[in-house]
Image (cartoon, rainbow, N blue to C red):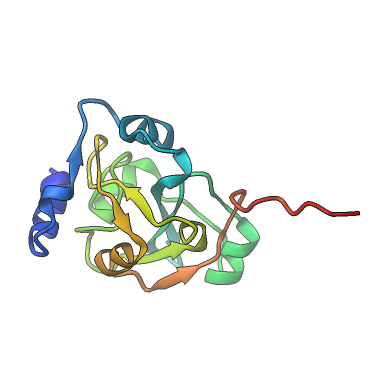
Length: 163
């Protein structure tokens, strides 16, 4: 099972005890926020895409949505999510538990700017009822991300004109 792979991954860093499992589903942002007792925006959702035929993961805040124009500008291609049937074979985790830890070789990970406003966030840990709380520095380190991108919309505070 994928959660065991993630726990083993974190065991190398002495952090396996920080992986939390819930008696309820945390497969969606809303369910994860409810299980953790936090705001949905603090859930670090991991989105799976194919870019030039290669799988990539974008970890974004729970209230962020992919902005197609920004995605195209960043990756040079249209945003095409991986189908639910292809997620586990390509990424290594099934839908509802996709995370940037203990994934298949060759999967590139990016962190979206929408996460930077938080001290800590909660990504899944390979199953539809798990999570771990990580700081931004820990998320960068343990996700082995390539870097930060700005490919989401809907999360920034609206700009209010003073006129």
